[in-house]
Amino acid sequence: MAQTRVFNSKKRRVLRKQIPFMENVSGVMLLAGLAGIGIWVATQGNNYNPEDRDVSLEQLLQASSQEKLYNLPLKPWVEPGTLQTVATPDPGIFPETIFDSEWKMESRIKQFDETNLFEKINGEAEKFLKQGFRSLNYLVLLSRDGNNEIAIELYDQESMGGSMGIFSDHMSGDKIIEQENEVVYFETSVGAIGRKGKYFFRIAGNTESEIIQQKTRQLITAFSQLQEKEHGTPKEFRILNEKMKISPERITYQQDNVFQYDFAKNFWFGQFEADDAGRVFIHQDMSLEQTKILFEKILEEQSYDYQIVEKSDTRVVMFHEYLKNYFVIGYQGTYLFGAENIKNQEQLVQLMENLGQEIGDG
Figure 1 (spheres, rainbow, N blue to C red):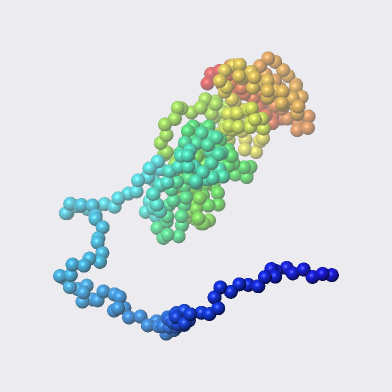
Figure 2: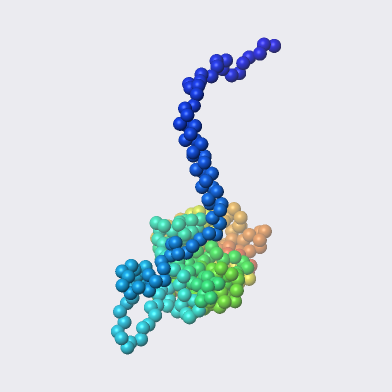
């Protein structure tokens, strides 16, 4: 087999055949200099004399010295003989009662709006924006001993519906919902999550400790003092709470994908008992015509799973053969209302009569 040369067969061309004497000398001197520096560094060790670099005590004591080593910061003027008070931090939107002798602000309050919310909660920003987000105020409290921190996120969701929608997304079956004045919340291992009016808040400490839990409860009490300018409580909420006697912690708001239908939006739900799946719902549309269209759409979709038991022009009762429960839906003016997961048909009829009456009077 013939052998093939891989490399170029031409010999390498040498441009110069000798190194000048001065180049050799400079190379040797450079190496000697580097070796000398290395030896000097190695032999120094802790050989440090403060007098070589520090200002001597005699110089510091000289009254005539013009050299200033430190300039004191300016302080506010205080009239002689008056008591000097410690300035309290500006709480901004937060109630002043969140501060006490044991907790102080670690830094100034940070504010976010629609343009930069993603900087704080990148993965959740879209969810808040869809629910009417207006602003976020972020504050960190530090305990007096410096060992405990509590981060507070206070969201302005523009309306009660917006805050309830976000709060509903955070709830699950194992959460115990509590209420203090107008604040509805549930506790976590390191804080709490809740809402009041148009505000939604999250409280998170850095540890699971009693001092964090105590401060969390105090913050919840303080949040009941949040000031807000609202256009009144939504009629749907008032009907469920005041007329139907449903506790606020069992009233929820869902903005999108109601009944898992992308065309159904902005529904209010009221659950009579915490351990009962049965609940009533109310929705207000822009016009009677749009209410009728939504009524027909929901009725068409539900008919794939439910059998129609009773039907009139404005009301339909349906029964699920497998789940053995009832679903009823009707409309009155611009309001669409009904109930789901109801076991007793007589209860269903009474609920619809009560809802219709309260909607008409509300």
